[in-house]
Length: 68
Image (cartoon, rainbow, N blue to C red; front, top):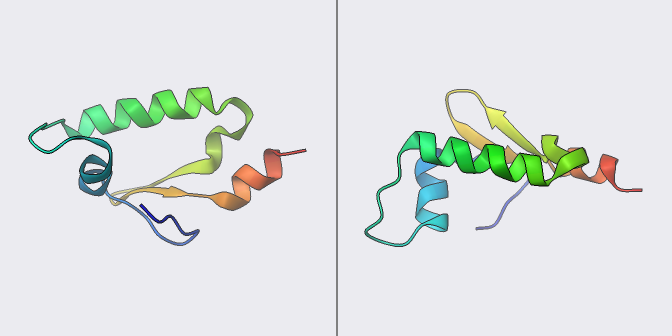
């Protein structure tokens, strides 16, 4: 998955990239995994932004601001 600063990904896009064919996770499964990933990112957890009603986007500017 190529991630750009202005691109967003709906939960179906995330499922297509992260789960195997034949698996059918729910939208809540995606939300749960994103929450877990944010927790693991600790200080850079806002690097994954929620785009309300659309999905998620990778906010590189937020990740870079936490590196130092």
